[in-house]
Image 1 (cartoon, each protein chain N blue to C red):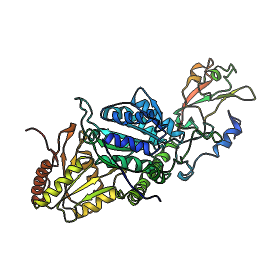
Image 2: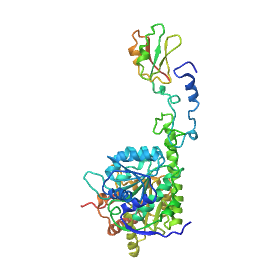
Image 3: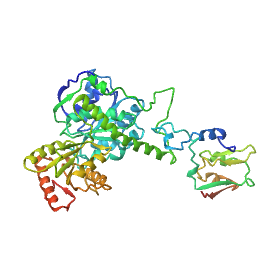
Image 4: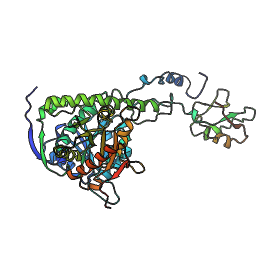
Length: 106
Length: 397
C-alpha cells in the first residue's frame, strides 16, 4: 500500500475484514476499528490537489475534520481517500485555490 | 432426577411472574412501576427485603432506563428480568431493539394494557403486538400457570446459544395480573436441574478478552447481522419445541407445540386467538359442542417466532377460521388475523377467514359472545364466502 495516513497498519487490518456471513461473529461485538472500516465510500465529490499552486501552508491539514490529509516526505499534502468523505472544507479554506472538488465516478 | 412434587400456591398472575423470576434465580432486575404490572416488581422487592434472594434491584427513572440497565447487566453475563405494560413498553421501544440486536436473553413480563388516549388500564394486546418487529420472542399466557411456566421456559429458550434473543411473556391486565388462581410451583432444586446458570454468548466481564458492544457497522457489515438475527429467530422455533417438551416431561405440562389446539378434530369452525380470552373460548367450545356446533379452538402461544407451519397444517383441515383479535392495526385489520392470513398465501390452504375485533380496552368478552360469533360464522360457511372481513363485534349500534 502506498504511503498513507496509517500505512502498513491499515493494510494489515484490511485482511481482517469479513468476506462471508460465516466469518461474522454471532453477535455484533468487536467489529474492528476504522483501520478496516473505511468511510471514504460515503464521498460524492473528491478533493484533488494541484501541487503547482500549493504553498505548503498546511491550512487544509489543520482544517480537515477526519483527519484525512497527511503531509508527504516531500512536504506537499495528500488526501487519504479511504477516509475522505468529500466535505470540501479543505478546498474552501485553501488560500491559493490549489484544491478543487471533482465529481467522482464509481 | 428428583421426584416432582409441585408446591401449590394461590397467586395472582403478577405474583406468578415474580415467583417465576425468583425460581429462575434471576440476578438483576431493573424496572419502573406501571399499572397493572407493579405488583410483580413489588413482590420481587419483597423477596429481596425478606432475604430470600440476593437479586440486584436497580431502581430507575423510566422504562427506557430500565431496559438500558437490563441491557448493561445482561451484557456482563447476568440473568436479567424486568416487567412493564402499555405506555412503559412503548417508552422502551428503542431499547427493545438494542437488547435483541445485541443478542441478550433478557426476559420481560408485559401485562397487556390498552394504550392511551383515552386513558385505560384494562386489557388489550396492541401494546405488545406493536413491538412485534423488535426481535423479541413473544409468548401469550392463557392463565397464571402459563405465566409462571412461561418465565421459566423463556429463560431456557432465550439463553440457548442457538437463539440468544430476548423474550416477552405476555399476560392480560387484571384478568390475569390481579386475579388469584392456583399455580403449581416447582421446587427450587428441580427448577435448577431444568434451568442451569446462564452460559453467555459473550461477556463484558471477561477482562482477558475485552470486547466492544454497540459499535458502528457500516453498510458493508450491518446486513449480515440482521440475517444472523433472523436465522436465530428461525432456530428458536426448534428450541421452543424442545424446551416445551422437556418441561412437559419433567413437570407434566406440555408446551411442545407453538399453538394449542382444542377439539379441532372434526371442527367446521375454529376460533383462533391469544392470551386469556382463549380460556373463555375453550369454555364456549364445550358449550357449543353440546348445542351441536362442530367447533374447536386454537390458541397461538408464540406470536414471535410465528407458528407458520402449524397454522398451515391447521388451515388445511378446517373450513372456517374466526380470529378473535383483542388488538387492532389502524389502516389494516386485527394483527393476528393479518399475520395468519399472510402465512397461507403461497399455500393450498384456503379456509374462510373472518376477523372479530373484541375486548379492546378491557371490554368483557364472554361465552355468549363466542356463541354469537359461531352463529355468524356458520352463516358465512353456508354462503361459502366472506362478505365482511373485519367485524367490530361489540360496537354499540
